Image 1 (cartoon, helix red, strand yellow):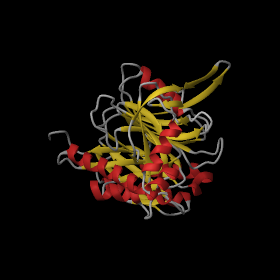
Image 2 (cartoon, rainbow, N blue to C red):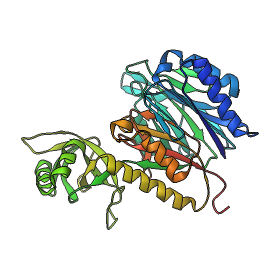
Image 3 (tube, helix red, strand yellow):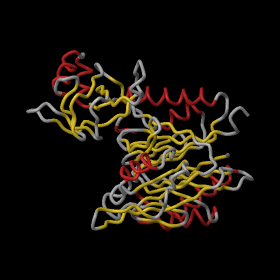
Image 4 (tube, one colour):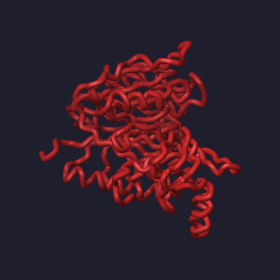
Length: 390
């Protein structure tokens, strides 16, 4: 495959769309684009249709997905303020099928419709969802259970502040609800999901739990375990625990040693001082192993850096062709002391490849073969050039 990307910092939707498309097409050379991803800053919420039309007038009919987002990524830059349009084009990617999905309420609950993920036909999908009208977690749970082998990567649109305020791009259209996606039927895509936490203290077996409520860890209340942990930590780490506490559920219970990256990270969303129980952002089973985690800038940097360096080893000399990045809107300048952290680190480790993406209100990506909705995560779809062993 061959990819190209363009980042345009212009407020006029016609100019921004035209320039982005012309620059990306020129970078592809003689190769014809077979897929596109388009991301725009909130300045384009009211002019998304004009922007989409300006892009497609230059590219011609093209399978394309994207959204208006709080901030956009282009190349090694993360544009967190001001107008910006980021366009990514790929050639020789293989067949691409784009689609829209909606959640329809019924008397007995609701139904997700618009596209059928067929059992026995797993594949790689990019998915961008409206956080107000589409239950992404329900879809991922269904796929994990009934369509094994399906891989979902993407994010929740972050440009709108309420129902019907999101703007999703699908080919030449703009939608305000549901989800848009693309099935990349023949593409080789490597998924990287950096959750950005490091474990602290000791792991414990969950000995009592109901739903997402953990009542006992190793026979004692979780709050007691937390108090013990805090008392044993230096003052600086104790402060990090107070501001960045998360729970890490062990992915592989048979792994002898666990390190950063070996956990599914979930937020601690509440605690009951009377009982000592804590609530986390996912269901927990008795017998699972849990270790408390801390998220800070250093941990997030180390985790993403390690994941990218591991990808270089996996590529074994093959050049990366391009990447799509779905990073949390709680990262960027809200987490790191320097701008452009995630995008710049990708460029440093993988090279200055064509990259586009956006700051999400929740990131989609696989961990240990199952698809999840994450927070404070960087999910990356990396497209290698050439063939393995070629």
